[in-house]
Amino acid sequence: MLQINNSLQPHQLAALLQQFWQLSASKILHIEKHYNTALGAPVFTREGQYTTRGWTEWTQGFQYGSAILQFDATGDDAFLDIGRQKTVAVMAPHVSHTGVHDHGFNNVSTYGNLLRLMKEERIPHNEWEQNFYELALKVSGATQAARWTPIKNGGFIHSFNGPHSLFVDTIRSCRILMLSHRLGHVLQGDNDVRTDLLQRAIQHMKATADFNIYYGEGRDTYDVAGRTAHECIFNVKDGNFRSPNAQQGFSGFTTWTRGLAWAMLGFAEELEFLAKEPAAQEHLPWMEKAARATCDFYIANTPTDGVPYWDTGAPQLAHFEGYLNQPSNPFNPFEPVDSSAAAIAAQGLIRLGKYLKEDKYFQAGLTVLHTLLQPPYISMDPEHQGLLLHAIYHQPNGWDYTPPGSKIPYGESCMWGDYHIRELALTVQRLITAEPYYTFYNGVL
Image (cartoon, one colour):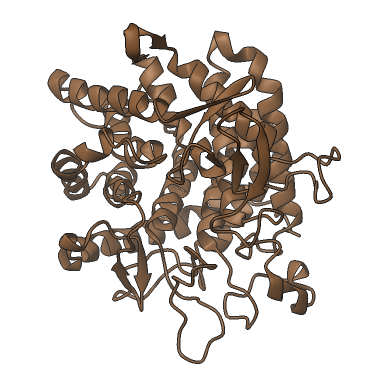
């Protein structure tokens, strides 16, 4: 169980954050200099060097979004130049991509962050540049919203697996619908039927809360409060729910911890947004219920230092006695940890704690960050292109690099883990410096 440090304060992390941003800068520049972009977007490292893995190009926005966050944190214009130039040169296909559920990852991280910086007056205002970012976000939100499966009393944005598939990950992609809505946009279809993007986002989140999240209310034999299914399967002919499933977790009846983390952060940051929307107030109670359940489950099912193993039901954990009563061990012989899940979850904990004004969650998030900013999780090796070590991509498929002599993968990084620890670090740094609270919607509210 996560042992929360209730005395830890944000300012106590200032020195570690300064070191973090220095390391972060060197990693971004190393990738810019040495990564072969002809291979596609960098996804995860193998022996310390970023490589790609064909599935979808869902990590490109994290690559260039990381440079934008680096500028935000340090004021170094070299990183703003990288983020701006590569967003213009590379990101346009992601705006109109009809085949993925990842618009909120790619486009909020790039176009969204650049618009936010302009509205925060961190970069000079330019009307045409602002219009460019806003148009990209408008189109991206509508394109994402069109990937729709109707079900009884609602619907959801379906995953790349097809119209039957609801991924818990997509809760964070709903941000793009919210930004598009706040910019005055709608999805327009056959016969000029107009779809309200805010309501479509809320419907997706409600489906996620109802089907991907469990509440200990007797839904099935494995109904433990806060447990999270990576994927939910529906009959597309009649809209009925059929079963939980997993693409990257061990099973549909265990909790893949990165999917859990996506839910924690997605519900927390969207609660922050919807609390400012008069038309959404009736939805706050069920969203808060989902956010609390997932965050409480994380705290209860994570080792003492706050870094989880890749799935709470991973089979070899049965042989790892007392693993929840000690710090995480990325070098153990049983199952890998997933530091990327920790980086995502920590931000969710901090945001929920601030939203609810409850120290338990806020302090839990700071505790996790404190762990991640130090070895063995932070990468000090200048030749290793990754920033956050011991991340896992796809354990069931065996995609992650296992060092010689080890029974499990460890020691590698991933683009979403590196981006999200930067986002987490920026969130806390802004609390220390009393800058505007970092949210995805600062550019539209």
